[in-house]
Length: 295
Image (cartoon, rainbow, N blue to C red):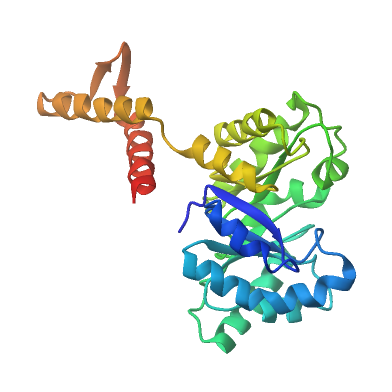
């Protein structure tokens, strides 16, 4: 299932919204029992998880569950979430690698109780603390379950990352470039190859602003994005889908390089640029993504 290019947040107490989410074809739904759920509805949100995950699994859509920051009730939240079809737990407000190790152990216990393969459930840490941002590399390598660091790119409405870091989010977003790059690098250096960026802080109807942030996330190296509104899913899927021009370019590049190899060369001029073995992995990745989108 990985990489997951688009994930849509769904408040888990709104059980009927899961079917609506499936209809817009995200790679995954983020069943949220944290910030989007009023405290009085959290028990119902937890009770809905098993059926919601089963519905997503039947539709071939990944299932993330964003739990609350680690607290005394976390074991109960994990018990409610772990079932066949759960793709990953999103852990907010992460500050230390020890939190990831604790979550790893809770998942291992509940996987055993549920009779599902050990290690099948991933972790996406949200380091919405200054300590977590600083130590994101150590957090990402604290467990082999970590699929990627969950970062964020925001429009001018600031959220948890901005408050913890201390920047004021702007439309231009240059104040966020360091953090975005750092989290991607920390994640990949730790072997967590699927960092995800939450896309926040823009008017829901401003699809141009949403697309700008998603393109920025892709160009920074995030493997996918998590969005807040169903209309944003199609934008994310389109941004991450290789264009016909990109497919033609990389097919031509591989063909030119294959001809060069047959001639005993390790580099070739292609469309005015020198191409050698270092350029081949990207070509293969883009074409693999194009095939994946046709499947």
